[in-house]
Image (cartoon, rainbow, N blue to C red):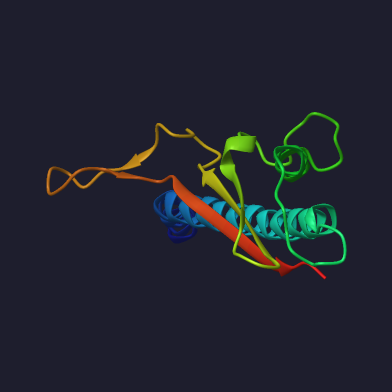
Length: 151
């Protein structure tokens, strides 16, 4: 009977030692999935915005693209808000993060830059290197671009 009690106590100790490692793995996988989802959203937003720009910026039958300030402003708002409900599709995304440019002739490039930050602790969480170097920020930029030809 005493041996069984010792085994139960050993299982509790092992669980206590492994729990932090398992939680770190779970949170890391969650953040990775979140980053991939947000990058997928950026890809769709850049592609849809580029499609909108080439439809609205082609001038007449020449096929040349003319980016007017109105088209750029409307396309930037589309990239940020999507359906126009006033809420950004990704938290913290602004029209300043969207760059729309003509690559000459019939090509239009839309680039969206988004700052990814972890769910927990946001921008305050830093990976310590214990004095060997500066601490590492866990924020990074997600950049998506799409190039389309106006027909």
